[in-house]
Image 1 (cartoon, rainbow, N blue to C red):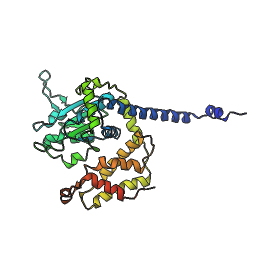
Image 2: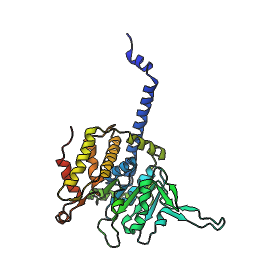
Image 3: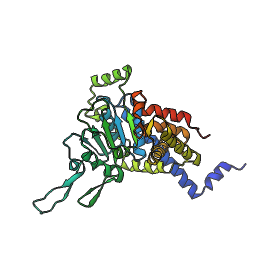
Image 4: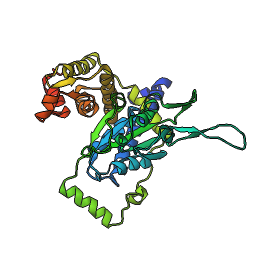
Length: 341
């Protein structure tokens, strides 16, 4: 009897073997990002959605805005993620007196050479934690715009490229408005996702206290046992894999229909722009890849629609007075727009 299985394996073409090796590498990358969640969970309890959103942001090469009251682990989440990816991270505490040069860097006089070399600011890192980003004036906030969009800093006519990967995680307090500045629309649009971190339920809060009672120190994420499971090379490889995720024409049309529906909603003053539609596509591709799909489906689009679009909608003033928010508007749009089969 002829063993067709052995024969097929023996006669396998080199390109077939190469494809198999590529599939194995993609599976290994997905598994590594799965372990990334577990590592972050060693320090951050009860914020699984925010952890997933942060990972989607990294994979889609976007930036994330974290909103929550003080003490819900926004800073800890960013530090833990950076530690588990073995990426360099820096923190900027945004204050009213912060200057643009304090973010990007500036030319500093060198007396020994009589020149003005460029001294890099904290933005030159892999993961930048912009803490309380709305506490600094628009002039300083705008210093982040070029870095977030172009991945470079221009000083005195010279462009200085930022490290790759580069990821900004900015935090905001939603209830304190004294001494704050509204983020410009252009800067809000540069954030791929806006994630809301709520106060945890009782059982999760108990777990937080238990960990602190056992000696966990939030300022030192290594004390939680976090170990690196990824590096910059793996992150860049995963980002390339995400870009290769396919999208059918009918799913693209579904994204367009959703975006147009937000512009026609009666309670919305300004709907989602075409750039917002491309942002949803990027996030859906990242979520599809992370969950083991090689092409996006309407489910991936629906899962990402609210975090990607909630900060891009402008709800009409009369609707806001009635308690209507961006999240509820988006939920209604998702329910009303026909889903492709």
